[in-house]
Length: 348
Ligand code: BGC
Image: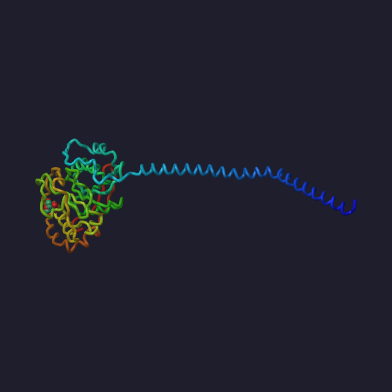
């Protein structure tokens, strides 16, 4: 064999060797890395499986959340209808001498600390009822007895405040109502206030205890006066004003001690602000006055005509912004908030 032939043989064998070497290393690589490939595969699979299950979880969560919020939406109360289906119209009022406060509490289990809101729908109106009071326990009882179910049939969110004048100075209805307003707004942002005499009981629940675009007078007639408006500008007994309307007129005057004039003074304030008094229809705005003796002697405000002559001059400085008083107690029995207050005395 010549040198050339020998070199060719070696290089051919080299080629084989290289080929075999390559094959072996491929085999070795496969053997070495097949496990790792599996592992890698597993590693890849494991998180992807986690992602899948997480996704499932998330999906489940999303569907649960949707369900929850659907439930929440149905749990969230719908707004009460424009007109309450619970209204009954004119009703016969009874004033049972044997009635007790406990009876009225038992009949109104959903009222707490004087406050109520329907549990089954979201009330459209929040109203504070303010009742000035002194030594008229029986009247108060009758009024609470009728007023609570009356207001509940109207599907209102409401609270009843009784503002009790302490001491024996002459009664001042208007100042007590200013106090009631100032105390009630500490509890809640009431949008509407009903200024309510303790001895007047509404007869027809279509007489809505809600406010209007204009100050509203709710007593067109009462039994004692043949259900006729007492006079054209009469604005006494029960009136409804929004927070803004009442604020605009600076509330009531604080200077009317004794019976009469304070409601006329409020009318002058309202008119002075270019507001007009509105009233519900006469067949609806009817009240029964619980019988009592009329105020006489020094219970009558003999100064009322003089004061009335000064309203336009005085209203800015005499009213909510000058109402000074001392709260003696705020009690919260089941049926009303009882504010007992020292409002001073005439010329104090
Ligand atoms: C008084 C009012 C009272 C009205 C009706 C008027 O003379 O000034 O305060 O509400 O009579 O009794």
